[in-house]
Length: 446
View 1 (cartoon, rainbow, N blue to C red):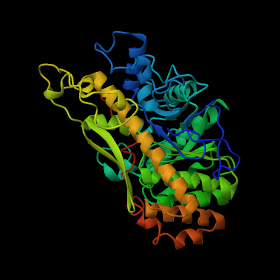
View 2: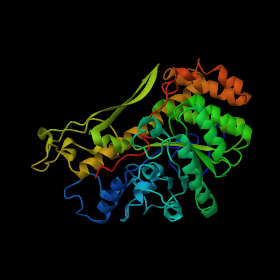
View 3: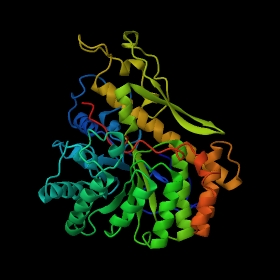
View 4: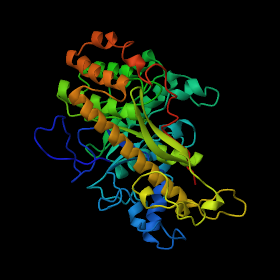
């Protein structure tokens, strides 16, 4: 992540305080929060406490402790915010870098595991099951989603999904909300009320129904979560309803696109400027780990007038790279210390792959570092463009940044409507519905 450059009172963007001393996360930007693979979190911890765990040498100049990106003393690469899913992590009984973290210098956002629960991978039958989820969240997290039932599969996989309508999803979610609201420990965790819905009309009904339960913030999920017109519309409604008064945090589930990152930063700044409320925005994906399934490595971001995207390619994997001193091809904190022989190792006799579990952990570490750098760079570009009003990259997003401020300055739905076709529908994600929560959860790789 980027670092604070200085503490000059003339800093042009509003900053947000948190409990983390010397936090490296920029306090004036929306925060990317990686959703960490529980198995990888455990392997990294095991590698630290057991010197022979990996069974081979790490890259030259890298220690097992360097792989722990949550360690505030880590000189290689450190982040302060991560996400974990209760639906998966509750099954993990061994310690890991998340459960053993320095809580004074880190912040964990928990997903409640609603997707696994709705898919019968982790069924909730009664209040005793809800208690297990709530107890785990309060023991491990600082911020958490409330327990929800996703609506996306109602449209995407109706024959395989346990819930057959949005109404059924909402009814089950309300049972979970009632339990959480009545049984939570006040002040222990900041809870975010999850918003779902496959259409704007469904989203309106969902919001009007769940808002009776007051929590500390909101999480945007489902098929509308990337649609910036719908996001701004919902926030305007919340503002008019007085719902932002008690909101400290907003989270957008399942996104790490560079264009979305800069727009969420602009939205966070605008909310502070125009409403006066100190609301932090965060967003997450498991992309650094999901890419392992396809053996893909992050490359470099592309910044052009019409787009901002992060690149990824297949990792070079061949027996010719066994023991190779050739440098790892793409930059990152760990990648800058790797050679191809650190990744490509002899596999089993029955495998066509030339990698092992350390290879996978190194690749995920590289992907995380490269993605965080790309997001920080995109925000830097937009910081400059916001001041000089010259959006050389991501011009559709640049137009939206200006419009978002105008919308919340007016506070009027009519201003939002005026820019729906001319600005918001020109954004990469705002014309179509998203794929629901498919990027919100993922199966374990090991």
